Length: 397
Image (cartoon, rainbow, N blue to C red; front, top):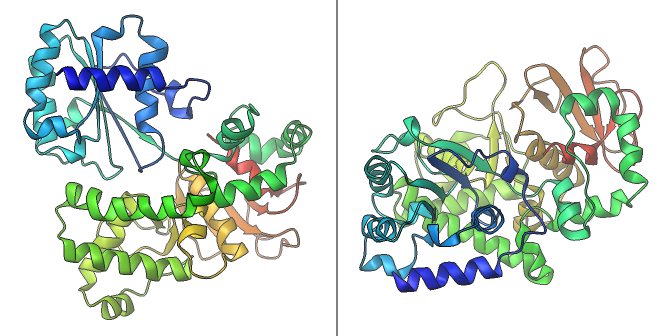
């Protein structure tokens, strides 16, 4: 227990609070059981530590612990909580819960046995809160943490603070919104920088090794998180990496399941299952037309890598401008909006708004007969009418 307390104290002291992620203010921290899921490297640990440091006066009544700590090889979570409760503990923050066997059952038991204890736990974006043995869905309030938006990147790296804007703001008032931003920064160079290395906060540690760090995240997700959350075997991990490599080389991708099945040497259902896992792991983003429902065995109409940083880090060839633009748009919109495929344009948003994505020369020909249709234009500081600067969609969260 003393070892856990020392680590907790050291981490709190080292935690900075000058930059706070968007999710911090969206969480109702008074709930008794809070689940925060998200990809590796997006800042889940920091979010919890910042809350303790900023909001809790008596930090001895709180405890942060990562469940992949070696301490748990000879102790249980229930044992830790009992000792903490005896010491007067009131709030416990559990990190990396998917690395701990039977985590859901123990958390449920703790929740039921200590009615005055508040619990916050984090885990992989694949965390099966709603299908776990303990059925935590009736108890836990679930939040998802995504990578940095373009707006957050500008604050995190350059200390430029801009407010969040809604999609409706952008569609109806982009002509007036853009100057409030472009008058303060050179937005196009910053946007290019963000597309290459601005999504994961770890870029600040060493930008020169950032691509290698991203590749390390990908390997850790497939080698460690996937087996912990989905019970796949090592041999399956190798095939999933092969599938990801194929997708990375040709995104955006309309999957040919029979061809993929033959190339990788697994069944159609296994291919669809692996695509589903990669999507949940936030390594790819797959979606269907508005008429379909997305399930584990539904063939997606379109597949992208999850974010543009993955595109630059994993693609063997130079990233195609069109791929980068569409990947960015899908990545930023999915956080707050429903993204679907459509045969008429690149994207259908919220079953209502049609979007084409392109460079400054993109014309209206493809959308001229569609109501509520827009063009997201790359390489421009401001737009006009139904042409909207692509970078502005990075201010949605």
